[in-house]
Image 1: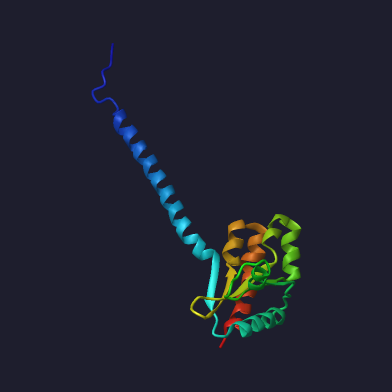
Image 2: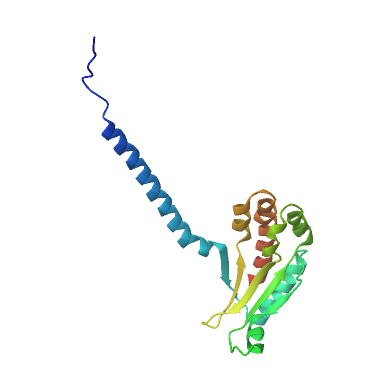
Length: 172
């Protein structure tokens, strides 16, 4: 006895559903990638205009670093370094390093590879508009991207300290 199937399963419809799903998934991944490509650079660096002139901003930054229990292991005058190499450059740009030894040790004990991002740095620079600006890496976002100890230290402790330092620098 043979059994006839009156309504065989529609394999074309099933294939189309899977194909539609896969195409939608691919379009979603590409869309997310493009969105991240355009948004992340603006999120990774935080820049704020200083209400103070260049020298006063640099001085306030040094004072705020030490008053919040951090130290500044170095400073690079990028304008001067370029001029010394025969490359004329007029706007002033200085990069000030920040370090909090306890935070640094905590990260380095478990994740030494992240040392390429240490110490933290803040740049003070003159814009083409004549104003002074302060830029720094978004350590909160950066820390969260890594997870673990890095997220705990950079994503919360360092980020919170840097916010206080920056608030002091940029206060009227």
